[in-house]
Length: 332
Image (cartoon, rainbow, N blue to C red):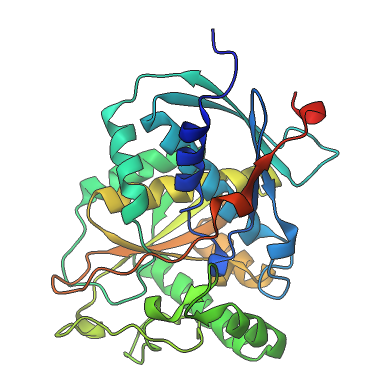
């Protein structure tokens, strides 16, 4: 019988993998608490982006991605995570309580965990190679395992999604408070959070290119010899049957599953939430792209050009800043 958490080294290792999850503007809006028998995930509201994410949707997606990273890390380390999501209605920022049980890692769990340190948000052009349908099917199955639906946007759906991305970009460009917040959280060089200049290419001026966020001080070059006209990329949308906090948290877990699967298959990925941050634009995506299901995340995926240099890892806060002991009186 399992009587508590594994040793501190194992817990620290799993949490260190969890905080490698992507988060909006690399805000890392999570806190972890370690009890005698359980581990707990909390939202860190001090890191919520009030102009970009006033409703906290991106925050919940980010925390959901970290939760799936944690589950994946523990599975590869020989522990199955039994997760109780949103366990306390009186404490809305308490997002999950995790119990652990001994477990024999499966090969696909080890593969996904190995992808965690290699995954990057790659905003550069893709190559002209097509992504095999079998790869998309694997990603869709992993999303379904998390209670979500992964759709590929082609033809009409792609047109409406690209239009929604452009509309959101234009609206945000006209919002001075949004631009100030974006600038404050990007162009970083020696910070443990925020979007580093070394991970952002210049604004894409290619005809027909998807609109991108104008992060401050872009310092990443496009691969030599590649062009935006040759870029072949997938646009994938993760959606849910409802739009409550549980659905948003689960969509974050599905996002992690899709990104890690894509990384393990050798694909470059970039999660996009800008077209879903404005309620009316999100409604258009729901009507025209997901056909009534609630869109939660857009993922851009494809093959990196063969001469693309590896991206540096985005920085993370020290573990002691995000993992603390839990008050034994509350560890139930």
